[in-house]
Length: 156
Image (cartoon, rainbow, N blue to C red; front, side, top):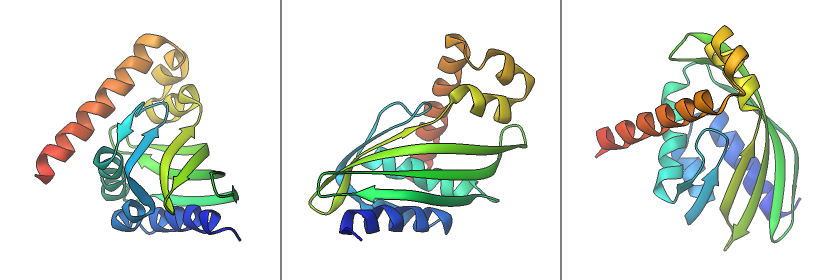
């Protein structure tokens, strides 16, 4: 197995154990992360997001498969099952991840998933009906950014 594929596997194994420090160790200090909710997080912000999710994910279960990587890039499919804390609703999120590497670490991490499907599971009927709509998507992103900023502020 390529060392970068092992690195991806380590990242998700750490996530499954809610080991945010282990996840951060897989990231290059200049990492750039994005997904449909957290559209652009750089460096320490990305690690802080994972730490927040690890701490809040009381019933979080993570699985990873289809890991592939070479010297420059990699990919994986991963699934997260958890209870969305704001609504108490169960979520099963199926995610495709893409990675780029530098100096034996993840320098770029992009997760792709259906925000509409996620909103339907996490928010219920409102999310199901309006999860495709730009105003609800913007509200989800704004709330996530606010939550992360508040979390980071409390860590200082």
